[in-house]
Amino acid sequence: MTSENIATPSEAEAASAGADDRFLNELVARAQAEGLQLTGQGGLLQQLTERLLESTLEGEMTDHLGYDRHDPAGKNGANSRNGKYSKTAVTDVGPVEIDVPRDREGAFEPQIVKKRQRRLTSVDEMVLSLSAKGLTHGEISTHLAEVYGAEVSKQTISTITDSVMEGMAEWQARPLDRVYPVVFIDCINVKIRVLSTIL
Image (cartoon, rainbow, N blue to C red; front, side, top):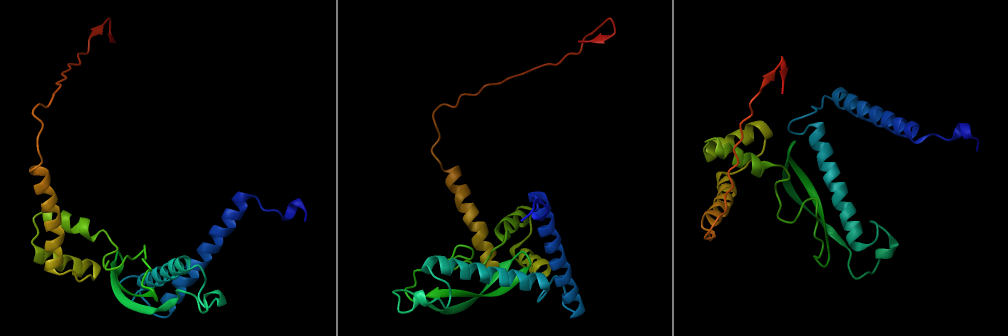
């Protein structure tokens, strides 16, 4: 191999970025040619998010069991894959239906989409922000449905805001120290001009 055939790291990164750009452009072009929306319900971003989450969950299961899917090493093993279950997760691109793998022993604890976790977005922070701005639970629910296509019930919104209220109540009821030292610092900045020069 000659030195002419060896790519420098910056050339390799540029080639990789070019390949990524070509792949993304081709993907978007195919979606548009097939009439698939890029965003919204059933859009390309939603489908990509769904596939990415499912691939990650499969990777987590492989790590958990110690062997790949259909690997002979898992044959007649102590624990193995045991099908999947479907769940809807609310993401930044809207709700996605994902298949979560499970194992025979029920010991698999997914990290990317935890058990009983339904929201993968900053919905909690958004609910608290909208609530702080004075929106009612019904208005918040309607807003999330219109903007994100996410059905968040009034009860869920109430649970989110109540959890913060509980924390605030605990903070307000905390025991206080008898003495709190306070330091006041005051300063005056005076510009003095001496012979046309500011000091």
